[in-house]
Length: 302
Image 1 (cartoon, rainbow, N blue to C red):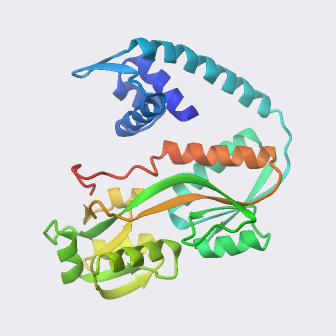
Image 2 (tube, rainbow, N blue to C red):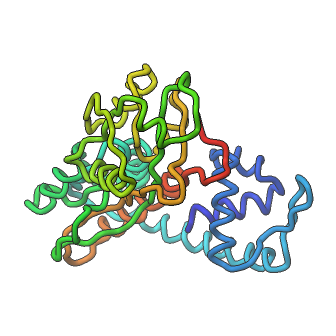
């Protein structure tokens, strides 16, 4: 919520979503999404929109004063936290699709706040990370929520949700995702992974049989194969999907599957390190729009 409040203050003071985007180093769509989330949370509009101009609503003006006060208090708390001399090693695991969008910025922010803290980062599949946490080899893991009940001795903190989409080579025409799955070779997200099991359940629920060509757990490899005309695939709508050249992105309709990303930690007493780690992971997820896929009716990303 701190990120959204900072964005709100920037828009209010600069009088422009575009100017706020430049100041906060976010995309203009990210700024708009953060303002929408605040308005949904508060239950009222913060701005009056007339064409391309915006002005604060009456409630928005009151909210601005409170937001600036809250941010001042938070920044004061953060300055005090800089004086903490927390030492030790934080062992954290991550899946490949969150290492740059969530883990890297979160740990950078945590290092600024707690410079004496050291990190060990393990990159692996969700199932492996879960086993490492269970064995006491990791303090936390950013992963896909397990498709089974959560272990009683662990805590889960949700960071993001991502819809799955169909990706196809750009030179293959057609908007009917069912037809493409029935006529093109299929590059399958590995069935043994938590994310791949979501794809399997979706295909089964839709009574679709695919002509599998490749099965792999590496989403970046899947994107590269699709871009090289090897077939189509169903993947979560992660950031690389939107910028990968030579692919088209098709929504899977009202029943599109969704994966939940979060942090798994062992149950136990809280600590400053754990609390600040969770805070910065949540802030990184919000700032990078990890959970905002396109919706039906919007132009699919390329």
